[in-house]
Image 1 (cartoon, rainbow, N blue to C red):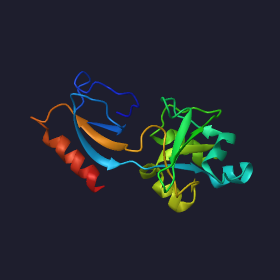
Image 2 (image 1 turned 60 degrees about the horizontal axis):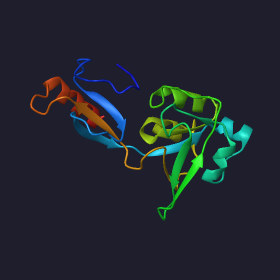
Image 3 (image 1 turned 135 degrees about the horizontal axis):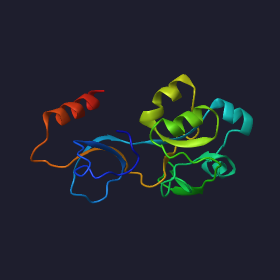
Image 4 (image 1 turned 120 degrees about the vertical axis):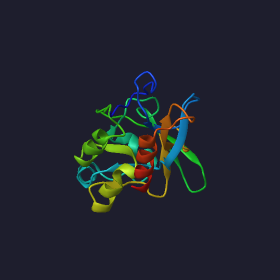
Length: 173
């Protein structure tokens, strides 16, 4: 089941969930799968038509592809090598409610605007040149620099073998 909502795993009878970001206090067991490093990207076509931002503040003048989650749709936070943070207000014509899936990624590849996406999702797009990392020397986030991808499950006392197998398979991945 792919869903951007935070579901009640017990009520929905879900054995294991994959959650992105920082985790709120919860009764669920959380196991870090990987750290998330976000990147600000655009397609070469978008950059040809609209120009390439030279510094993070320049994206305020561009069409940014937004995700309708608090923080993601109004500002992005950049951190330079000296750990100095710069908050940049963003705007844009398009908001996609499947942010960490392929929705924002496909819109960015299609040249519809600048997007903030997790590196693990767009690694191949950067390698093949479908997307360009606009600020490779900056750390960037919409909410928190300590975000990760987590496996969450209801109980430490009993973890089904199929859950253990899935987590191991995805880790090796």
